Amino acid sequence: MATKDTGGQKHANRTDQEVEEVEAGSDVQERNEKLSEDVDDILDEIDEVLESNSEDFVRQFVQKGGQ
Image (cartoon, rainbow, N blue to C red):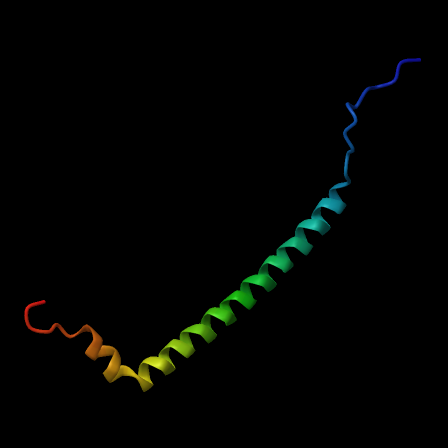
């Protein structure tokens, strides 16, 4: 009796793949939201520093004679 050689490959069910894709998609979305929050926090902190030190910040970029 002849048997079919599958080459050692495992055939996954379509539902298994769909579940993994949905889980991966939600993980990516969660990570993206966390990164967005972190970026917003950093930008807010930069704004606060610039507001409190804006005069000093601008003074550093003013050209002095001969530059």
